[in-house]
Length: 358
Image 1 (cartoon, rainbow, N blue to C red):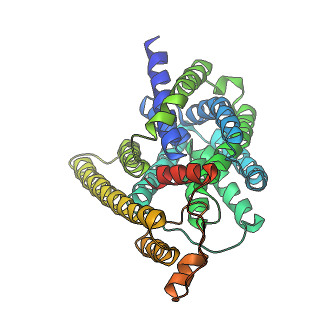
Image 2: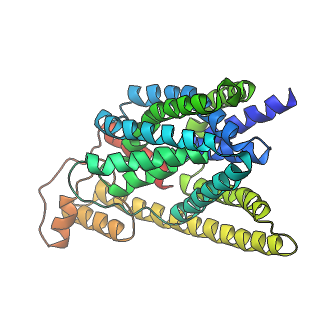
Image 3: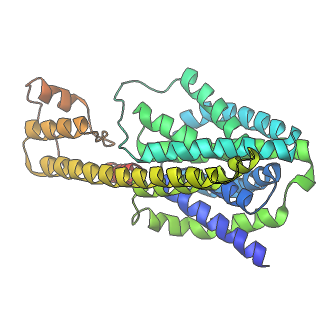
């Protein structure tokens, strides 16, 4: 009973992270399961089976709030499913001794990526046009394979790539990635079922993770309004890096004072990343406050100049905000007056953009 309670808390913690960042449910839960001694293949299989329930609930919620771009879902989910099935088959075919350092290396890399990603503002690429299949298909294939072999990685790979493209509203990036993950989790579960059989799924673990995730879902919706994603991402990235460094050092047979030095260096890097995340968060908030003030009280030309200054400072374009006034302001042209009142959808997009960028 105590073990199931701990696993439920793992699922709860993982869902809190995922609900706040739009990523890292599998990454967090797999790391904690490996730390608890669960075999790599069984950990990934159990996490993906639990994700079928959590991603279904998340997808329905995003659909009801209009956060899903079904065109993107259709073009990224199928390649993601193929990659996840291949990754599950691969992980099921290798021994536990070989799988542990492989999985730890993937998780360590993704954790380091989270540290770098959330230690600085996300600069949007404002290129026009829609996302094409030649970009979405390879992205889904790679993200699905990494997700299955690493026990997590769909969100950390797909979400930042779509955000950086600058061609989707942040709320639709998160909604589309979460919705498509239902297909990916299902394909990975089928792959593990074929490779490991029913004994590969730890059903009590699955149930505990699922219960914890469902309990955490409404809490995460509240938490995202309290804890900045910028700071939370850096904190969670450090936890994942340090936890999986232990497995990698053990697999490499490193002993003596070397692990202490490695942990110390990683700890220093973690602190630096958190400090940079706080600085980036403050800079982003100041830039956003300047833009909001300009849009509320200034003339259209001055508001466009404020938006241009925020963009140069690393502030990404807000959903519903046009790029043309910024370019016109830089060239000295005065744009036509526009209405400053935001629609309900634009206001919601602004909130979700703030949640993603911190």
